Amino acid sequence: MRVPIPLVLFLALAVSGGVWWYGTRYADFLTPPSAAKLAEIRASLESSLPQADHPDDAVSVPAIVKNPPPAAPVEELKPAMVLGDLATPPTLREYSDLAPKGAGHLINLAVLLEVEGEFHRALLAWERALDMGKPDEAQATAAIASIKRLRPTLPDWNTHPAKAIAITLHAGTGKKSATTLAPILEQTARDLERASAGILKVTVTVTAGRSNSSASSAAPVALWLAGPTKHSLSTKVLSFTLTSPKSLHDDLLKSVFLIVRSDLGHATSHTPPALAKNDNLLEALNSRITRLDWHELGTRLNRPPVKDE
Image 1 (spheres, helix red, strand yellow):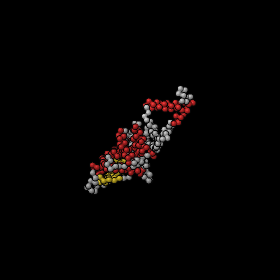
Image 2 (cartoon, one colour):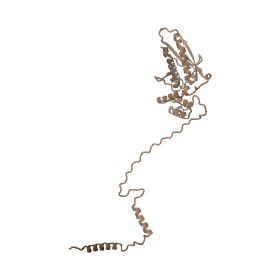
Image 3 (spheres, rainbow, N blue to C red):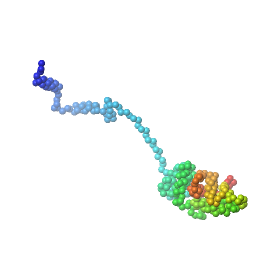
Image 4 (cartoon, rainbow, N blue to C red):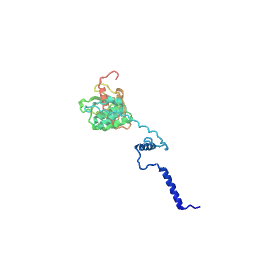
């Protein structure tokens, strides 16, 4: 049996209206809620929201907490380097009291002094790194390079010839070779004075022995340094063979370097200067042997002799 459409529409409206009336017959849509009711609604709403410090709700997957990265190591602050009283003129032994701190400390000091424009003091600090700081190979190379760079830009340490320390460069050879040796030995003496920055005054003594028995040009030469008198202290004697006048100057320079090296190693606590294979000998005398080294040598040779020296 077919139900008429108007009846269907009426029944649908009647059912919908009846349900709405039954559910809302006691509701008051005109009176606003009380303050207590609003507070209750607000509390209920807030309890349903996620907490600020716990953003995830009960359904969310908890975030994986990663281990925090390790803290960066705290670099120990180094104390500022003290330059000391820069107004007082330095002595030749300046910064020797810092030698126990090592060559690295003295090199850092030298660099800072150069930055401050204290080039006289910087050169002294570089020299202390070399002669008293017990440098390793790299530190010694840096010190020598800096001494080579600074020495030519500064005046000699001693500019008063009367205050120079007198020493004598002795040589002994045969009569024939003495004639060849004498002028080159004088030239070597002047080289030593310049290398010492005016600290030393070097005179020359050539002792000629018997004539060379051989017609060959080769002749033995004995070389040593001593104080100015016949009773003065002297270094050990070093000998070489004069084979050619062309190489004589280099032979003398090398022999003097080795004599000074030996004496410093024997008589002082300084690091003995090293001579590299391809070194320019004049440069080595000016840069590898410090001004304090030359002063120590001259001072020792001028002391009264003692039994054990």
